[in-house]
Image 1 (tube, rainbow, N blue to C red):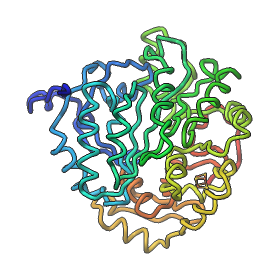
Image 2 (cartoon, rainbow, N blue to C red):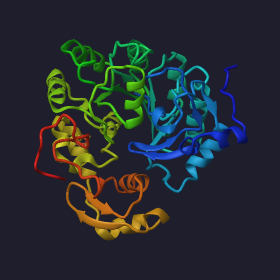
Image 3 (spheres, helix red, strand yellow):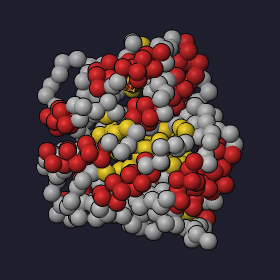
Image 4 (cartoon, rainbow, N blue to C red):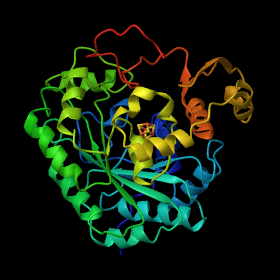
Length: 385
Ligand code: SF4
């Protein structure tokens, strides 16, 4: 019998920071379910810093798995078979020994409902062979396991070694017949920490096991920078940013190291979609320069799935959301719809997934060739998307 995580009382839940109480939250790559929070793996750059949850090292549940699934599928942002779902990607690792049974319970419940949504499960933990059978039973869902691997050796930044994720990736990718897909989630790439030629070659060798690879940088937010400073950790950047940071020269070196690869992507949704032989569900195809590393078969798939919506269609989809009532369509091009009037990011992600098309906020312009990343480390380019 597996050990489950303790269930918090109502009173304990009321004491949690407000954002930690938000069990269903739209994040960039999907609607995220986080009814279990707390993690002992202590990665210094953990997003838990930004939720006031850094001190919560032991996983605890805010509700039962059944209640959580019910909240997810009845959420106004959830669209059956369409909305990509992410499980436990904010505040715990889904394959910690006492979180694992909850992960399988949620996946089993969603699958039993006949749902065909993408479900992304991101882990750096050790996995067991028994997990292969469990995941192969999920015949409806499109499950992708993403293995967080950085190659960072500094124990102050990542006390839990990267080679564990590497072994898990190999184990779970080994069966030739499987229902689920595997992605090498190569992150965070940080200049000076894990970007030597040797690091890049190791990641390349590992990528040969996975169905696809995505590389990305570090979310260096204010709260994470404060933690670095307070603990005397070497700071990777002089400033913080709301987007992930991948400097231009590092990206060029990554592309060179993977020049013989046809399964390297800049965007998580692209890697996941490619692994399932589907068009990118985030509609990145409009951002043409993102696709210059993509194989022709995938380009073709994405091109066929790329439909520029009319302003009327956008407003029609937005009508379902009270928080999008003030939506103004500023511009629509082949690349993206630019909107204003949304007070937060979550409804924007909803629109993006409902339409399979990029929706940008006029307040946060995307720069051409920067792939939606932070400006840090990139020379000035004159064009905005
Ligand atoms: S063709 Fe473009 S949008 Fe489609 S998966 Fe490749 S990079 Fe992503």
